[in-house]
Image (cartoon, rainbow, N blue to C red):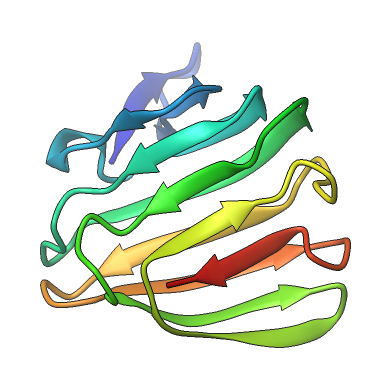
Length: 136
């Protein structure tokens, strides 16, 4: 999902929709396609139940000051995939949540999440050891 932007030369382009998120909340299907910018005090963000075609990205855009930002799967054991953390591939195997860890975060760490209607498939990258973890 994006916003169509028309430039002065009448060329149209799709621009990604970004939204800052610094505290917890619950996302819905209307949030599919967005890029959420993670910073601030942390909190829990709950995804909707897996729905085919749902996709989202979380990017650390500023320091996490006092708590982790938790991306909860909305349903137990539905997250699968891998995250590259400090150069090592970490398996995400039937996880309940992903955690941007406030003591190891780095601006630019990210996680992409998409669904086939049954599971959430994840791929991400964190610079520092323990920057992003999967639990559950």
